[in-house]
Image (cartoon, rainbow, N blue to C red; front, side, top):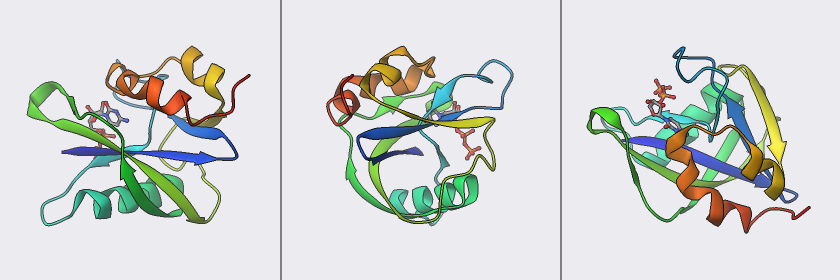
Length: 126
Ligand code: CDP
């Protein structure tokens, strides 16, 4: 399983720009990564966000609908709350906070598009 986090603050959603692999580099995603053996999905997501963004988070509600990825992986997204730190692109090319319009206009990785309607509703409207 792969887990990804929707970090919303002040009506804006944090998007992260992938640096790899070449076919996905430059595209934007909800930050996250693979669940390792022995981890819960929530624990894995908190670890990934600590490693990739340098922040402490608490994982909240799951977004609706898991997404099947190539290779038999399943992608699941959760709301996450920022507890401490300021997100930094430790593993990504760049970070960006988007409102509803910015999310709809972003060059998102395909798998994450499933959550655009649900996420847009949580964000500041233009
Ligand atoms: O960092 P780690 O190697 O654990 O995982 P990753 O390379 O970030 O993600 C594993 C797989 O999930 C890749 O195929 C990503 O493209 C996919 N993924 C995704 O589709 N959407 C996300 N928000 C995060 C990962």
